[in-house]
Length: 248
Image (cartoon, rainbow, N blue to C red; front, side):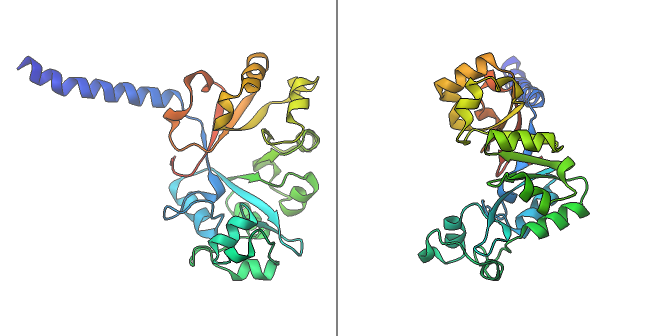
């Protein structure tokens, strides 16, 4: 009889312990590239945006690129977009805006322009827009003039990082893919960096381990689909995660 009760209680205790641990580590979740929709990722589509809102995300990310006629739109890369829209033979060729909006992603999802994204977020003031690929302050100000207090911007140079901060963007992430990252972090500017957008693979990087040991910054981590995969020693720093599948 005693073993019977233990067999019931132990799993319950383990479950409670796991739940308690998860409560201790709850970074903000960012719907990556609009978030997964019907198990499809990287679509940056209208349907992904609507699905992310329905799931309860507050932070939604879009990759922003220019078409061949200089209109800002949402796409992870032109090669990806061409593959997703049955135009793989075009490789990484850049479509015109008219061509872009005429296509359907995986035959059923609707591409989005920056103008449409801006209109949607202006109508939904509880949402925050996260941007990738484009960090030029003048471009972001032009396309999203009223959203800077609700934007999280990944900056791809220290110059962009500083300009965005000075212009009042609420949260600026210095990209681990920035060409000037190493020079900035090892220079006198180290203390000015408040946030870094970091890929999960960087945790094993010797340079990162050194910088992390001497500098104080928070991390927005990509791309994460189980919180348990994040090393415990870095969880105090990881305040935001880009995810395809973890839901709020």
